[in-house]
Image (cartoon, rainbow, N blue to C red):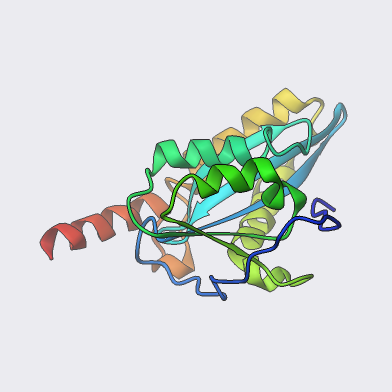
Length: 192
């Protein structure tokens, strides 16, 4: 289990409220953490997905569950990939990494970011992030027996960056890949 919600940090309300509809880039991001077994030990994967096109725009692999190695690292990557230029709902579960002072203060530096967290014990509130992990594990992780973390990291990198984001078709996107769907949205915005 990767969610530790036994802390005294404040918990924002569920602003996202399961509104997972794609279509607007940079309006809502969802994030979660999962674990990948290797013979060398656990490897933790944090992802940030833009609901606009279901693209994994930020991710981090780490040996620890520390916020700086997981959510902070993934969030910095997401910001580089998609600078925040409009109001953005950032939604996660109630894991301590998302609630801790370091991460909270990083988000609060940008007045465009609105924090949102799932209701206690409700995985459906973060269903897109959970669904990504189910897909990743079924299509990639469970197909391998990783000898070490570096091997797992390379295979996960290839899955996210060369398959999932660029080629894998999504029923929620009209059977387009995240990159194809983003191009379609950008063309519609230019034409409008």
